[in-house]
Length: 131
Image (cartoon, rainbow, N blue to C red; front, side, top):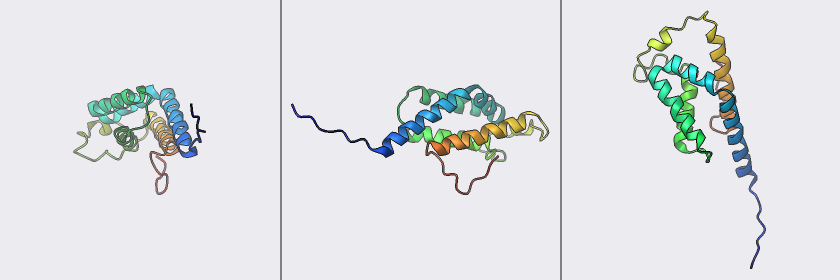
């Protein structure tokens, strides 16, 4: 029997570790992310967060589909879809007042999600700003 030496690729190991770190972040903030997605996106936000939860439960490497869903969730939390009539009817965003105590919480959650996505190599932080 022949044995070959396995040489680990540090890029793959880093990717796996960063994805595991993202899964841990998501698990720690799952409920808050779910509430924010429903608050900001209504039924479409609920479908999005449920799809992300389902994909993350499989414990396999991030797929292109999951990456697109995570970017969509990030954009939802960063209010990228606030005035996009194709994304939602806009009533969810209209319910929020700037002085509502939930707004700073959503901003902190969005910033944390952005950092976690950057650490998992899903997004680049260059040219982006905090919520």
